[in-house]
Image 1 (cartoon, rainbow, N blue to C red):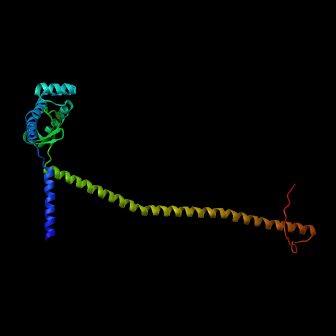
Image 2 (image 1 turned 120 degrees about the horizontal axis):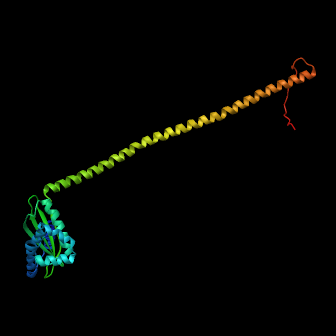
Image 3 (image 1 turned 90 degrees about the vertical axis):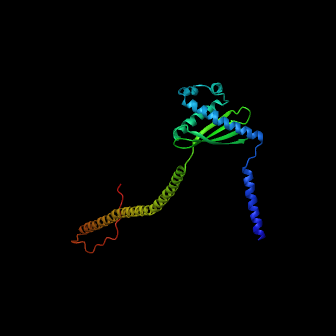
Length: 262
């Protein structure tokens, strides 16, 4: 029982430490800065971006240098911005507004301090779909815009669709690999059959070649033997004629020696 209670207390302490680690405690000054930065993002920065996008002459900003963009925004909207960051923010917000069906309305915000930056997440309810804007400001007196982006919020249907697509891709890849492996294994029997046929063909050709080489030799030997018998008969007849005998009976040719003609 004591061990069980000790284990329970340990688990509770671990969860308590985890919860404490996730909570950020800000001073009153930091909380005021977060409120001011949030109000700046909701009431000035995002409306300024929307106003520039709705202005037909907004394309002119893309022709200016970052320093010129900073000067124009400071003069028109009284905002401190990074020129490159503001142009990128225009591109991000323009693409997201097309996906969610319009500019929408702000429904809430959260803000956190991360070192020398203040990060504000602004929820926007669009006509077709919701989105979330991330605005990053400098953590100082000027609250200079360092980056801003707007991204479509994924719905449950989107998440389920992505999960189903990932599942199909994974299963499809597995089945494709299995099919390739089965085809490779089945091709082994075809390879062995081809090799066997090739070996049989080679052995047949070798046997035919050996028979073709042996046949002329045998024919030549028979021919030479036939020629020797005829020669023996002619020599025997010549000897019988020289001796005045009427036939070659009694003559036996023991050997025949060929002499080279000079």
